[in-house]
Amino acid sequence: MDFGTSFYKWAPLILVIMAFTFKAPKMLWTKVSGRPGQDLRKIRDLVLEARSFKKVKQRERKMHQVVNYFETFVTGYKTYNLPIIGENNGKFLAVFFCLGRHSGSYLSSLYLAIKILNFFNLIFNFGLMSSFLDKSYWRYGYDGLKSIFTTGDWGDPHNFPRALMCDFEMPNTASATTDSATSASDKQPVIYEVKCMMTINLMLEKVFLVFWFWLIIMFWVTIANFVHWFRVTIANFVHWFLKIKEPCSHIFFLKDYMKIVYQSHPPQRDNDGCSSSSSSSSS
Image 1 (tube, rainbow, N blue to C red):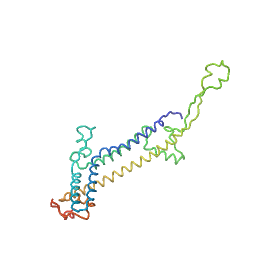
Image 2: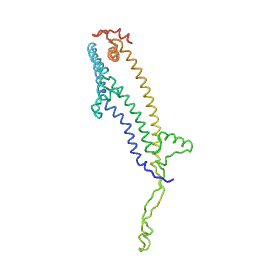
Image 3: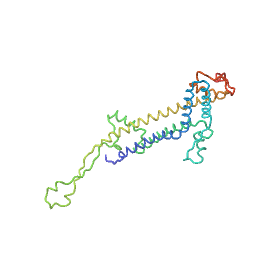
Image 4: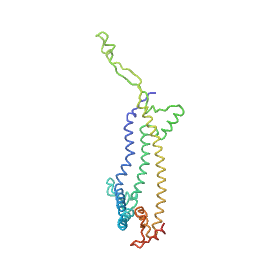
């Protein structure tokens, strides 16, 4: 069977491109989640500072600051600026990602967007490999396993040939020992055709087979994780929505969230008129 192929020469570049596509969502998450991350770190620092106070009144005063800051962080609105979208980025993000000016779900919506991006990234990699291998990459591993169990061996000679016919040009040493009157055509170099073993392709065909299994595992793990996260998020949202209907419940929710700091000194009554009985009723 005679055919020409040059894909295996580009295999390292393809692997670099695929590595970048999997690194891109992480880079994007780190870039766009910077501000909320700073807010969370500030809350953590305030809590640690409050725990360092030995006097109860100082601790409660500092914790009141933490609660107010955390309440602003949770219920306040977030803004997000994406220069590449332009002036209408607020409307765009508000419609598609629930990240508008009056949205309090910045991190959760952003986290959901990254999960969706990871899913489409896997689809893109399958399409990329199908394009360069000139075959459906969705069946690549299945065909490989089928060949191994039926014939005991597997290979992809079209993309990763194990043996090639190579032409080597050697000087015509035989004409040098003859009479000097030898014609010029007899002095031309001799071309030898030999079979060359492509050992690098023996490794590459295994690399892309293992990569197929890795993509399949990541594909199903991503789907399962997305479904699990979505169910948990919906359940928590319903619980939160019902809870905030009770008076003062959001205040006690914040204080319960920080109870590790002043667990031994629960609040009795606040200036807003909410008593601890409301907390017990809300729970």
